[in-house]
Image (cartoon, rainbow, N blue to C red; front, side, top):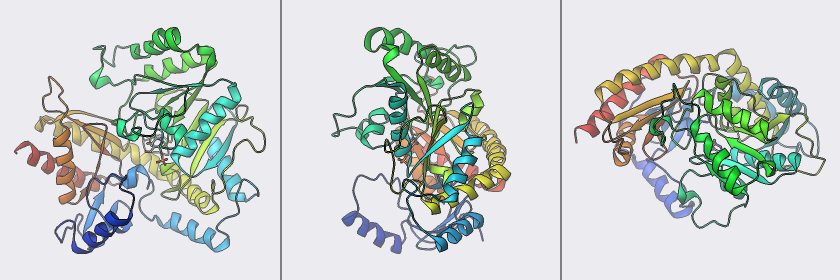
Length: 442
Ligand code: PLP
């Protein structure tokens, strides 16, 4: 069957009915970029309720790592669902949770034996990370980065500094969080080039925060996304994370890598921080870990996870069906999909770089593996943000049968399932090319 295959106006009649019901009954706080109403999916292809078929380069916001309904994952879920759905790993035991902790512990690059805490989402994984950091260090302050997204629960939201609307009306947030500038090499405020810089942007922590606002010996942790996701798919230079590691170690501060979006193979390595050769103390994951089943994991070096029984727990965290899905996901990632993300990601990136020559709207193409950002600008010299144009390209892609999302103020993100083939990547490139041309010719 051809992909994409758009047979109705969008939204089609059935989709429109569901959207109308949603408008009347579902929280208006959700942001829907376009009216896609899912009926089913397989691999990187999704079908809506009117029978239109789309190529999915959004993966449910970077979640369906093994593709939609990978047979191995579906089999693992069904088998576990036939045995038991829930028993609460916080009060009882089941083998898959232990197996997952062991397997994850061998993968996570924290530089030694690890332990895992289980939750249900990225926000919860980060809540656990900051609670653990505070508990272990007996310090209170946290440093996070401008543009960072760490979740929307009150603790995680205090660290999130992505869009003001996400914080507006909810203050006061958890106190004790400071934000520093992230390495945005395309828009370096210091005018430096990534090839020759020494992550001077981190000087803000040493020369401003530590001098004027907080003593480093009171800082429990620095939380960082190794590749900033919602903030625009920003890839920092190696020296940024290397220097951050040196700085944190020097002051006994824990380094927390939020790999909720960048982890589980998306970057072409199991964890994005592995591209940097840096070992964090705590790692949080969610999204891609269980191919779409809700699961968060906060892992740390075993000596750091020293909190006693009762200190932290979650009724649903580490649900047995999610654990079974995660074990199947990890197997698939290790066998083929992390390598596929690197391979097809390089292919996609090369195609985008060629495309950038033809499209003045493209200011920057960046990313690793299948975590790729395309920043659109009105003028390559001034780098004026092409916000409306970015939104129009996303709409144009949707009408042509390609699902993509925005990131940051004016970037497009490509975060397809890691099963994407080169032929599918070429389809995505063709549609993007057309959508960009349409907007440029307006
Ligand atoms: N951390 C990062 C880096 C994320 O990208 C997200 C979600 O986009 C979160 C945390 C929050 O995850 P969740 O929406 O599962 O709470």
